[in-house]
Structure formats: structure tokens, C-alpha cells
Image (cartoon, rainbow over all chains, first blue to last red; front, side, top):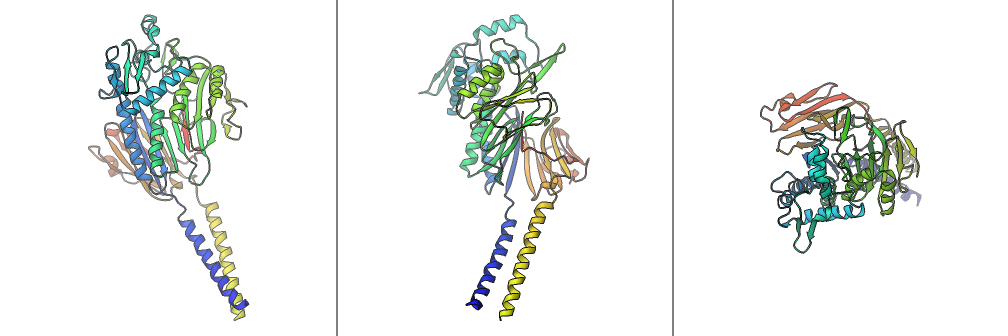
Length: 348
Length: 129
């Protein structure tokens, strides 16, 4: 009995030894990286797994499509056509464009117009982020502001058609298109079987699943007081979600000693000054995170936090100009770490 | 026979023990991110940071802009190079492999810089801004 048992036991042990070794070797999961300049920004994707390279290629193909249908400045784009035909006739658009406009109107509704998709002409007047940025005159703004009613966007679902009833406004999806693009890239990657990936669309972050080793992703939130990219205000640990930050430090110009940033409050026509210097939204769909980060930034802390608390599955991290960090109730202190002593964490 | 079995058993246990320690030691003490970092900038903006000492397997990726101008970056454990590009002069490709601090490869037509800097270990996976 004993004589038979020992050799068998030895062989089992030896096998265990070898399998554990070969497992170590296959531990390095294949990874693919891709980067491209699109949608007015720089887009970086990283995917893990066997099919990662092909999956990323397909995701970036989708990104190119979205870029060409939703850019305001591409003569062939749906948005360009809607603006060209403003006050004249409805334009038949792609299902993607229709969905993004529908979502934009939804956020305009729940924020009472603080999120405004027809603010294009006001944004053009400021030209922030271009080489002809300027502070517009009161007269110029007064010609545009009374007309900023987003009800002038008429949707016809049956025909997938969009009509802008007045040519005094223009459609701009800049505050939401990148979010949609991230969601679409995620859809393609998941269709291709990817279960671990990260996307960064010019500061809009989306992660699929967890890191290849099973850990949460650690996302840094830019310190809004530092112009140097990569200086952190905080880090937050997340899985399978999207995170979008809006900040006054991102795009701005200076005129006579004053900084003018790119998040325009449709109520005043001026860059929003409601006490927030950085607003981060965390929610699974990036299109929601994108629209809400702009909205919360403009709404200010009280109204912004109240709005986010009223929505299921959406969280926020807000930094105010007096350097306090506020969060919604779903952001716990073991997820969020403050990285700069300048900021005071007001635990929710 | 009994004696031989005993030896086999002992030697297998010993082997198992040593290899476990070996694997543990390798994971614990292998270099991770205290060395060199490659920073890729385009038109003055840092777009990519790669900790070269953390790279375990070689890979490449392409940086392409809206005009279809591209540079292919090839990353190896401890080094990096621009392996292909569609710029007219291809000086960046000719520069070859970068591995030492302050090594640099430039593609002026595409405004792209690849530079080796002192390793600063990144504590984050992604930056929201």
C-alpha cells in the first residue's frame, strides 16, 4: 500500500510544480495601445486580452465616424447641415446624431436650460481655445442671449430628422459628443470580447472592468490650481465606469489680467462663476458624465450636488474656489484620497 | 525501495520549496518603475508616459493625427524608438533606439518628441482633467 502510494504522490507533486511554473509564464496578458487626434482632442486607448489590438482598431474606426458626423466644422457633418438649414428645413441625421441630440435635450430639460445645446453662436463669439479669443461686447452678447431657448430644436423621431427653427442660434454638441464617443468605443471593445480596457478622451476617462490583475483603476483628478498637467488634487479608485472632469483651468485666455475659461453660463453669456473650479462626475455612461460635469460646474455646489443626488447611479466630486472638496453620498473615503494639502475634504 | 521513495519525496519537497521562494523573490524584488520613463509630446502637449522598466514584453502603437500623419512607436523593456513614420525626411526613424536619460527623437514635421526622463513612478492609471 505504502509502496504504491509514494510514487503516485511524487508524480502528482511534480506535475503541480510544473503547472505552477507554466502559469507564471503566461501571466503577462497581451496589451494593445492606440492614440489618435480626433474630436478636437487627444484620444488614448489601452486594451488587454488576446483580441485587444483588433478590438482597439475597430473602436478607433468608430471614433473616426463619430468625429466626422458630429464636428461642427466639417461641411459633411450632421451638425453642420442642421446649422446651415436653421430656420429653413429639417435635416435627416444618423441614428447616432439623433440619440446624442435627444440626450442633450434631456439634460437641458432636467437642468432648466443650464446645459444648453444651442449655445454654439455664443461659444463662437468668445472663441476660447482658438487664436481669436476675445471678450465680447455687451451689445454682441445681448443680440444672442435672448434667443438661447433650446425648444427651438425640433425632433422628428419617425424620420430621424432635426430642425433648428431659428438661425439666431446654432447647435453645438461639444459638451456631450466626447462622452458619446467613449460609450461607443466601449461598446465595440466589449463586442470584441474585451473585459479590461481604459480610454482617455482628452481627460474624459472610461474604464472597462478592472485592471488585468483584478485591482480597481486609480484615476487621478487634476489639481485645478496647477497649470502643469498631472499634478493631482485627488485620486479615486473605480471599476467599470466613466469619469469626466470639467474645470476652468482646461481652456482659457487672459485679457487685462483676468482669466476667461471655456465653460459658458447660458444665463449670463460669460464663463460660469458659481464657486466651482472643478467638477467630476462618475457614472457608467460617459455621455451622462460629460453632460453632467458641465451642468454641475455651471449650477454651482448646492444645486449641482442636489441634482446629482437625485439621479440614480451618478456620483460627483466637486472642488470649490475656497478649496473645499465635496462629494455625493456614494463616494466613500476609502475610494477617494486627497493628494494636496491645499484642499479640505468635506466628507459626505 | 522504501529508502529511494523517501529520497524522491524529500527532493521533491525541497524543489517545491526552493522554486516557491524563487518565484516569490522574483515578484517581490524585480525592478518596477524606479528607472527611466519615456515621455511623448505632440505640439508641446505631453500625450504619453511610459515607464520603460515596467515594460515586460515589446509592443508597438501608432500615433496618428487628423491629417493622417502618423508615427509608429516601438517599446521594448528599457528602451523605445520611432520605428516608422510617414513624414517626408524620416529623421525620427533614423534616430534609432532611445534608452538613456535625455535621449531624444524628434519628428519636426509632425511636432512629435520622444524623450527619456528620470523615472518618476506614476501612482495613477489615468488622469481626468
